Length: 175
Image 1 (cartoon, rainbow, N blue to C red):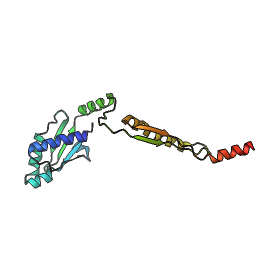
Image 2 (image 1 turned 45 degrees about the vertical axis):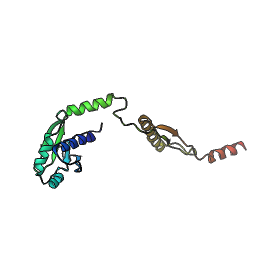
Image 3 (image 1 turned 90 degrees about the vertical axis):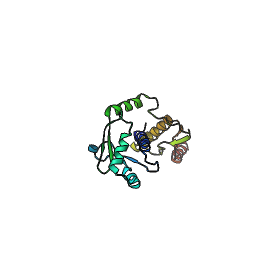
Image 4 (image 1 turned 120 degrees about the vertical axis):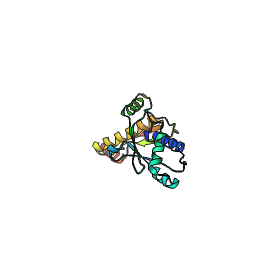
């Protein structure tokens, strides 16, 4: 579940119920300072200006139409018309627990499965392996596992290049 998307939908419904036309887009953003809350709603002021209503009055009307009592612990409306709210820790904890126990970690969107080729470290076999090869191998393997988990068909490849030196040494040894 995307909490920001979930809350944005609820806020949009509340605004429509208040009588604000849907063309006025509200922006939900994280508060920069935690003392103001977890999220802040911006856009009420511009809607109030266009509707020729006091922004504080309009914000309070929107808050009255919120159906988020089980999610929010506190809602504040500033004099300017900003709406700040705090998410209940218990609700957030429950959402995290639901994600942890679900098989797909909360991924609900169906994706179109694609064939994806991932090339791992591709070391030069004429030289010694080193830590740099390990890093790219781990990144490649992680990407392959994530893409497989999401539902893609992943083809893992580890191209071994620079065979010339090895064959040259082998031919020289045989001669």
